[in-house]
Each structure stands twice: as C-alpha cells, then as structure tokens.
Amino acid sequence: MMIGISRSLSICRRFWKNRSGNFGIMTALLLPVSLATVGVAMDMTKLIEVKTSLQDAADSAALAAASALSGKGLTNDQAIKLAREFMAAQIANSVAAQDGVAGDGTVSQELLDKLAEATLASVERTPNGSGNIFDVTVSGYYDVPMTAFTRLLGYETVRLNVSSSSQSATSDTKNPLSMHLVLDRSGSMAWNTTNTYQGTCKKKYGGSYPCTKYYTKIEALKIAVADLTNQLETADPDHAYVRTAAVSYNSSMQTPTKFAWGTAAVMTYVNNLPADGGTDSAKAMQTAYEAIAATSENKAHEAKNGESNPSKFIVFMTDGDNNYTSADTKTKATCDAAKLKGIEIYTIAFMAPSRGQSLLKYCATDLSHYFDANDAAELVAAFKEIGEKATETMTRLTN
Image 1 (tube, rainbow, N blue to C red):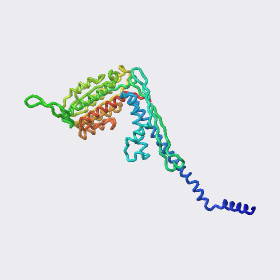
Image 2: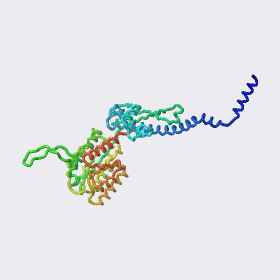
Image 3: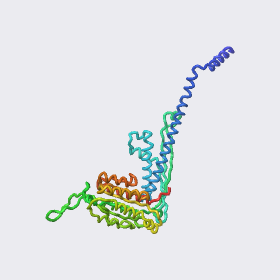
Image 4: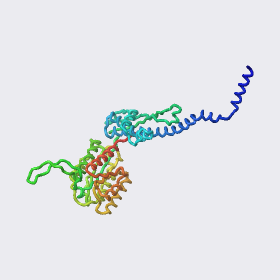
C-alpha cells in the first residue's frame, strides 16, 4: 500500500516538473481573456466617439426646439416632436449608420421611429413680461453593439445615456433688426417665367375668357417680397423691432424709401415698380449701405426698443449682368465695406447669367446667404428662407 502511494506521488512530481506542452495549455486558458481585453480596448474607443456624437445630437436638438418655440411660435407638443425627430435623425446619420443599422446609406422610417422612441423631451414655459421663457430638456440613449471579442465577457451591447438643455425667450428679449432691399427692375424683369396661373384674357371684339398666363419676373418679385414682409410683420406685429427700406435700380438708381418701422412703405414701393431700362447696381448698393450703416439707424432702435446694436441685413437681387464691368467693381467694393461693418448680405440671382451670378456670390456674406432662383417658385422660396433666417435672429438664445 505504501509502495503504491509513493509511486503515485512520484508520478505527480514528474508531471508538474515536465514543461513540455504547458505553453499550449496556458495559451488555451489565456487566449479568451486576451481577446476579450483587445475587444474591450477597441470598444472603449468606440464608446467615447459615440458618446460625443450623442451629446452633439442632444445639444443640437435642444437648441433647435428652443429656437423654434420662440422664433416660430411652436406649441410645447410641436417642439417636443421636433426635438425627438431631430435627435433621431442626427443619431441615424452619425451613429447608427456606423453600426450597420442603416448600412445601405439610407435612413429608414422604422429606424427613425425606433431612435425617436429612445428620446425624451420636455418643455417648460414661464411667463416673462409680455412673452415667455422656454426651457427645453432633451435626453436619450443608444445601445452600442459590442465587438465579438467583448461579447466573450457577456456584453452584447452597452447603453449610453445623454442629456442636454437650452433656453430661449420671446418678446422682452427680442433683438431688433434693420433690412434694406436692393431690387433689380430692369427691362428683362418684364420677361415671362416658366410658372403659370389661371387668369383672364380679353377677346378681340370685347368680353373675356379664362386662360393660362405666365408670371413675369417683376410679378414674381412682388409676390416674393410680400412673403418676406409678411414674416417680418408676424414676428413684429407692434412695429417695435423691425425697420425696413428699399431701393430699386435699372441703368440708374431709382428714388429709395427711407427706413421706417414695419414693412408697409416697402411693400407699397415694390408693388409700384415697373420693369424697364438697363442694369447698374452700383449706386443702389452704395445707397443701401450708407443708409443701414448710418448712426441714425442705431439711434432709432435705441429710442424705440432700447437696443443700440440691431441686426442689419441687405437683400440684393438681380436677374442679369450690369451693363458695364465697372459697376461690378463698385458694387463689390460696397459689399466689402458692408461686410466689414458686420452687415449680413443675402443675394438672389433670379434666372441670371453667369456674370450676374458671380457678382452675387461675391457679395453674399457666405454661400449660405446666396440663392440661385431659376423660376418664380424658387424666387418666392428664397425670399421666404431669408425672412425665416432674419426673424430667427430676433430671438436671443440664453444657453
């Protein structure tokens, strides 16, 4: 019996002292741990990147909702819906696509709905004098898929949570603005666009009949300016924050309007514009710049609404080329001076040739301020977008 025990112990000692084959055993034991460690390191880097993208999405969604509440008059429910859909779209485009959820490059409605369900938003509306203060909070999560290595540790996904808040206000914290329109009324503005409407035609020997007519460029311009002024009126119904003026030009500058509260004078001026003559924008742009940059314009706002530094815009539109390149040079010099003064310049090339387009691209504050309108509908859309952007500046975001 003792001999058997001694023999067994001797065999065990020899087994433990024998190193042959131990590397394979240790490798088999440690390989899963090593792979999992590599996976965790890779996924940690990914989690940091996704967390940053999620936070950016939440910040953008909160800011968009707060701005829309004060700038566009959204209800609480509309703002909440906007925030959830905005954040979902941001995540789908920046995060979900990387994880293969939308690998075909498109974003399905099913994916957007799923991401929107993971987003929560709330709005608190507090009376503030004659207006309101809006506090928006947006929070959400995203389940980040782990690599196969990390799944060895039992983690299929890791949930990341983010939250953001923003505040905006109306009425008592409105930023005032001054806007000067510089409008082409040259002979080519009498030409037809490709857009039609149902009008009335006269018969040769008396009477009339319904017929299809084409909008002329000058008619389209009047409709577009009306849309713009309606937005300004909606944003400032009491005429305490918005001042407007206009000047038109053909081969020479026409008599401009003076800056006035509201938009009535500008709309009357534009509705009476004929279309004739050549094209020279130099003097009209110079006149608009001098009027809007004048100290008297700041003082008018300070006396009315207490703000001595209003937002300032020039809206410059043409449908052609200046008759002389010297007019381009002078116009560009005026645009340079306006930009140095912090005046934003929006430009609209309305079915314009290449040289006219080049001038307007140069004068625009940046390419987001330049519009290339190829028909009446696009002209109206351009003026509408300018109105939306201008009135958004009337809302001061506090966060």
